[in-house]
Amino acid sequence: MFDIGFSELLVIAVVALLVIGPERLPKVARTAGVMFGRLQRYVNDVKADIQREIELDELKKLRSQFEDAARSVEQSVGEVDKEVRAVGDDLNRAIGDPPAGAPAAVPETAPAAGAPPPEPALPPPGDPAPGAKNPSEAKV
Image (cartoon, rainbow, N blue to C red; front, side):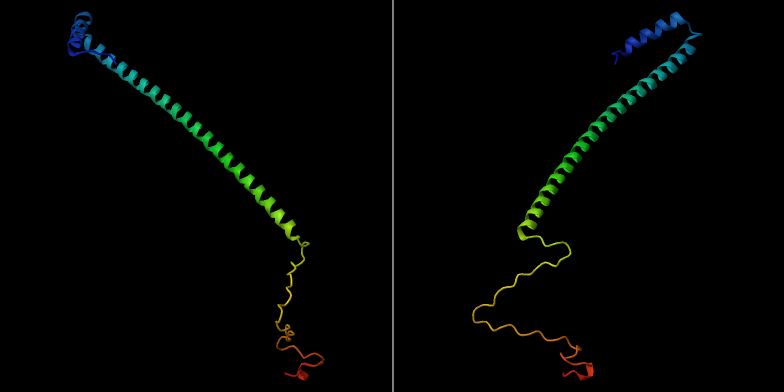
């Protein structure tokens, strides 16, 4: 801060002793020390306040950058969602979307040439035979 050497401090002390006098010099020195301490605390408080303001500004900048990035990601996700829905709609239109609640039709293929005809389905076990009135009359 100030470039004061030992010899200069000695000159200041001798002048202060001559001007103030030996009786009042200790009281003046004590008061000067207290004032110097208050000045240092005040300067440190101002430095700390300035540092807090700088950090607060940096945090605000970081917050705005983070919010911009979040908006950008949100827009990208929205665009991808629209594209996926458009492709899904195109696929549904291409396959002929069945009405809501109706089972999807499974296309049947013709049997290959020379393949045996499909066998008739058997009734599940425990069901009466066709034409039987009573389960006890069913032929197994």
